[in-house]
Length: 163
Length: 140
Image (cartoon, rainbow over all chains, first blue to last red; front, side, top):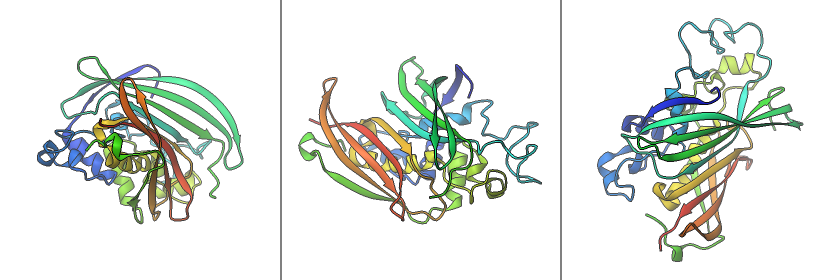
């Protein structure tokens, strides 16, 4: 995502259901509207890491196949882009969330993304490591900050050696 | 199911099995739900031949999502104030993961009693794949 991007993220029960299943969390708070009413949550709420699925609503998210644009995954060749990628691509190093309240179906979030710090480190397993931080803020329909996320990505000089 | 202050103490631990023999299909499910379609997680040809890894591996966020269950099962999802992790090793199809949470502190924060827990998720070889921490509100 680029600097200071603004994304609209409608929170929906079906999306929460699919997300919860994908992480193996079948708690009634996420997957069963009737049973969820009897829980402390009082209804469906999103799992802790659900805010990350804002990627679905970023119109030009680079990790989603886009019509007419080259894709770096395999088709006729192992990589759809010319030559071998110069690095193994970015990996996720850290992720942190701060919750002011849980997300619920019906919330319409305005999400802003901006870049944070960058730094470098040497590693035996992957060569030079280039870290970059990204801050994502989720505000609800009343303009209240509901979730703040900090993500640290790392680009490695070569694929991480398997230990 | 908020936890009562009187029912918890520093040093308490809890363990949870998160997944046994992780399937590639679960990686596909996570890609579809989250929107993270990075081929490193679903496209074995790309991952082996173009990116140079032995094969597809799990999204860090899938492991973080699975690990989050130990936090929400302990405290209730609506009571969690913070949850953060560091990804320390990759997770591969076929891996079996187990999470452990340890109560590190019980303290006051903005007029509420909260518990801090440290979290560690390990694979079947005993390697740590995630370290993390969470803070949750306690009752009374």
